[in-house]
Length: 314
Image (cartoon, rainbow, N blue to C red; front, side):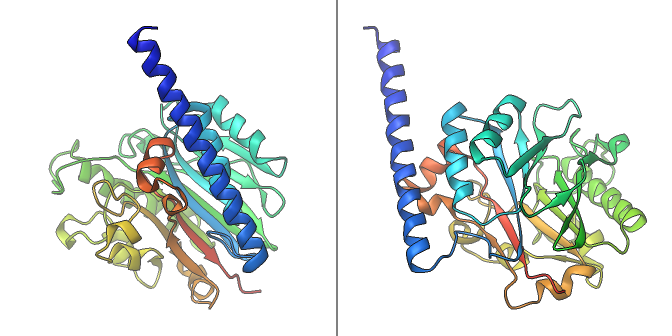
């Protein structure tokens, strides 16, 4: 047996062992949760439970990643999952089949490699076909136009906007350089806010995704000012996590480390978010794995999901 074949076999054996350990751990945790506290890793029964999750070049480890993702989703109580970096429609369809008949999925068809997508729990959500907006300005959005899902939950209507802003940059906003990464993210925010104000001004709006920038940047370099300058109209539900000093416990992108994945709500949802049973968290799925972040990063993603669970007022 040559060295290449030997290493290939060893690598696949290790993948199978890791998957077996994760599935066993997930099943044990689920059983314990059901028998002791009936609580999921994230989400509250009866609430509107939504997460945003950049699944780095899904599926990064092919079917193993799909199986890991199914088990991770089953640890949570979820209605909608807004996904980023879905590069394979067939893999997304395979994921939907493994999740079961009560899940539907959609992938934006705007010709880009890393597409925005949705997974929807059809037992709890009534929805319309998702659609892209601001396609004429897609350069600023790194050719990933925002992806909108209009849906109803418990007889109330909502607008969900899934985004994946341009990545990278030097951290300094250059207003005179149209190719500057921070300028493109800033411009994306401005276009998005204008679209929301014009088209969804009195709706229950949730904007979420991988914004590839930090809420806590200094004002002159902050791409979110168009939202944060209007606190009576918009609120980032994950701001408290962004302001924490411990990346391993609170931040969505600990490899850098930074907190790049956010959830923004319109003022129509402020009262709902202020309810006692409403929460917004970074979800530490890596804490459920025997090999922690190393295993999570290898099989699932370099981003953690960020979620919101809303206790909706009647």
